Length: 277
Image 1 (cartoon, rainbow, N blue to C red):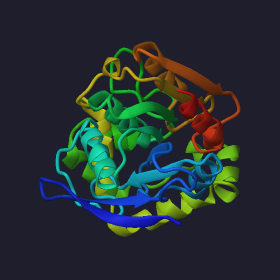
Image 2: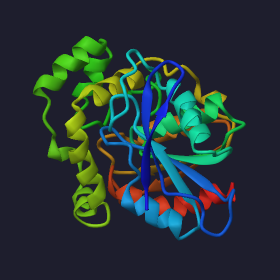
Image 3: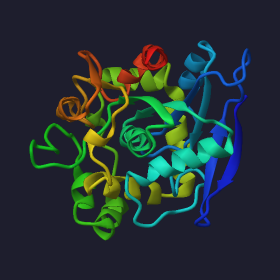
Image 4: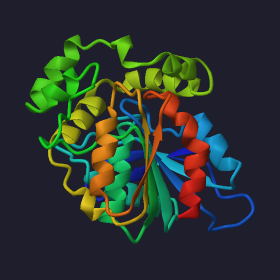
C-alpha cells in the first residue's frame, strides 16, 4: 500500500510525496527514491513498486514542482531537486537511500548525489539526458526536439511551444508501444493523470534541462548505473556515452533492442545493481 502526504518546505512550498511503507522484515532496510519522468505525477509506478517489494526495498518518491500536487518553483534548476529529495527523505524518516530516475527523472536523481553524497548511496538513470553541451550534437537523433529547442530560448518560448505541441508517435519503437500496452501500462496511465496539473511541470523541466544544471557530472562521486536503449529516439545514445565519460564512477548498460520505454524492463536488474553498490 502506497500512502501519499504533503511535505512542507521552509520556503513555503509543498511537495506531494509517496511512500510504500516500512520494509516488512526490518526497520532501517534499503530505501529507493524514484524520480519520475516528464510528465508524470510523481507516484511510483507499479512495476517499480513490485520489483522493489520482491527485494524487501521501500520506495519513496515525490512530484517535482508543478507536478502531481506539488507547488511551483519558478526558475528552478536541476540541482534544486537534490535538496527537495532530501527534504522528502527527512520527512519520511529516511537517512540514506538509493536513487533511480527514468527519462526526465535521470538528471534529478543525479542532483541528489551531487548535492548530498552523504545521503545518496548510488544512482541508476534509465534513458536520462546529459547536460546541454556543444561538445556533441545534443539534439542529434531526437525525433521531436522542439520542446527542448524552444527551452534553450527561455521559459516564455517553451510555454509558447506547449500551446501547439503534439505527441509524435515516431518517437517510440514498436517495443515501446508494446511495453505501454503490457508491463508498463501504469506509466501511460500516470502520464494521463498528470494532465490534470497542466503543462507547467514539463515546461520547467525542459528549461532546467536546457540550461546549466547547477552541478557538473564530475560532482557525482557515488556509483552510477547508466541504462540506455540503442534505438531511443527521445534521448539518443550519445547522451549516455557522454555521461559515461564524465561521471567519475559510472557503468553503462547499452540495451541493443530497446527504445525509450522498453528499456524500463531492466528496472529489477537495476535495483539489484544499486543494492550491490
